Image (cartoon, rainbow, N blue to C red; front, top):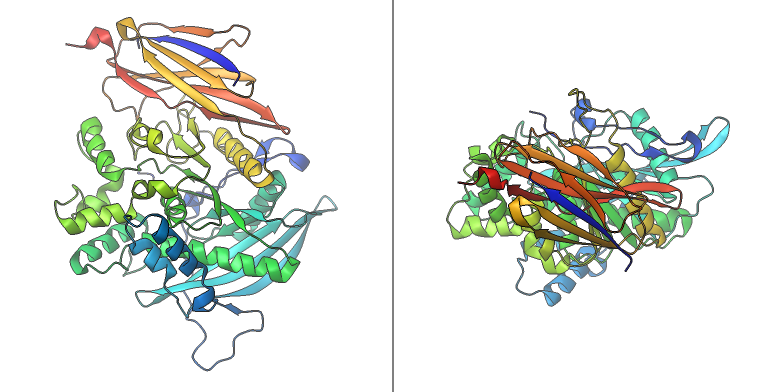
Length: 515
């Protein structure tokens, strides 16, 4: 591998219900970026309609689930069970269970034009994924195909919650598909909500986990039907690809944010061979028991963003076998042996949900190829905050790296392979060495300080490093605060794209403030 070195001497109640990645508008619109955060579109879905009544005829375009012998979920359950017999089976058993309510139908197909030229086609499906606790889950699935493209074997699938206004979604979807040069599918309604009354998002998940503890019924945790929604969406997309284009769709790159990022992790954890790669955003809490203990150490209490779980008696994690089993079933870390696919993890340095160094509790243990991007001065929505306190409207770092990752996975392009080594030196200094098999076009150091290990309100300073020296060196002046943190960012240019990747970060106590 080519080596470059960075020697770093250092003393040094917004909730995300859905995140729609604004994507870089390369091609027709140059490098402009559109950011659509659907938290501002918090709209309740229309009343979920019931399936066709017994005895009524289904539309000719409506397809039903495969027979039990042909069930993709059954294949997943058996394969996963044979490979890792010691792992919890509740998730894979739930996904594999046949459900007569699974159907999909074609709702429409529309050609789009821009500036008098073809822009692509939009295909809309209606998917009924399952019946859960008496409610049939319905999902809008929208597929965007760039002009002149023959759909291939790998698609990008974005997992989302409530459906925002279609005009904005369709503009976004066409731009993303054009950027990755592949079909881009968006799955909405994960989960269907509100449910169990007026519960939504974390409150809904917490309620279902509490009901599992009350009943010991393994079909209660909401993450299970959320995962099954993705599995059934992949089933439907495969059927539609074969029907529409005669295309053998075999693989998916899964992405989603927050609870949908959690869902992407757990879908990969089922062992479904169609999951080629995953790119979860802002779900930085694998290894849940250790993460909860870390929150208390860093914040002095659990993050206020997860108060719904405290309210239902789920945190602190009860010292019972049922509670231990529950948290193991929904923790992606439990299924590490199945998580060997390529992974891109995107986090904000100022996300109020998690301690800054939460990644360090699971990063080294993740198998397979993996990359991380830290977005400096960004919270749960990935939009960076400027020095004057204003927040940018466009999450440029996050979307550039996400779309570049998807493009590489879909088209077989190599991503840079990075290796990092951190070595503490005297007087609170650190030596950071990075090796890469591709030459970056820029290298930056980001540093922050805090009076405690809580960096949620910290300001991250950028220091661009010179690439004409090997090793690259930078000295960070002594800091007046007790704790310091740093990470290195490398920027690459490939296939006409610019994107950034990060090192894992480090937090340390400044030597001048140690007792």
